[in-house]
Length: 311
Ligand code: BDR
Ligand code: CA
Image (cartoon, rainbow, N blue to C red):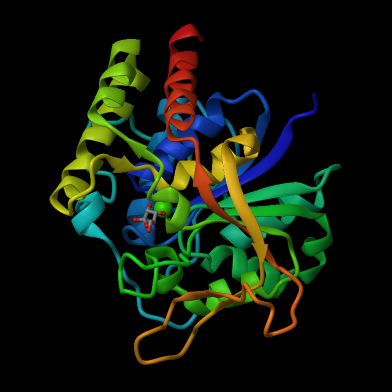
């Protein structure tokens, strides 16, 4: 089977880090480049975290630092969830490489345009870099197979009642991406809040043994502290859903919908608004995931971590 070429763009972030752990362990995927986004922490911190994760997982791909701030909004971060560093918890190796001397959108454009096959983008942070790419290089659209992103929500938000964090941080960027015409799979809160790992799953991962298993178990435990205080029975590994859908789409249910991004509004900025009855008369622009087989998702992560032990 030919591998799916992917570009990872994220703001690591515990669940971004676990998404990348799954991606790098999966022989079905070929990571062509990695880019950092401003989100869970400042761009300096998420870039450093991205490089440390790449060193831990032995991801050998060019890496570029992302845009320093959202297109129009001020920087917004999430230290309550991911800590001061953006990836608090276990010690990590220092970076094994430096970012390339290109901006994230330029590295993405070069990677996409030199790829013999269309590539899939996997953004797991605010969509600033992806929007900047599409605005500066509209010619890449024809070379992007799909954008499998974590972001948005249909039923309810997590940072406001209406908005999910990644979209709220940069709604103008999300608006550009959702109106781009590139096929989108939206792993929003509707499905990612079902993507729970329980303490029993953390123990299975720790029992694998080895440095990656130990770090992933520690990340899970750290990430769970915040969510437990919010009443969650486990840790929702939001960002790993965007990768898991590429690997095992049969584990998911979803619906093709037209989704608009609210960039104004007194209460609704950053909301992703679906049109289930077609009143806007627009063709669907997103495959919106709505359900998953939680146990199979947990098994997928455990099996991915076990591959680092075998390597
Ligand atoms: C999203 O927000 C971030 O804190 C997580 O990394 C995830 O991408 C969930 O709303
Ligand atoms: Ca993220």
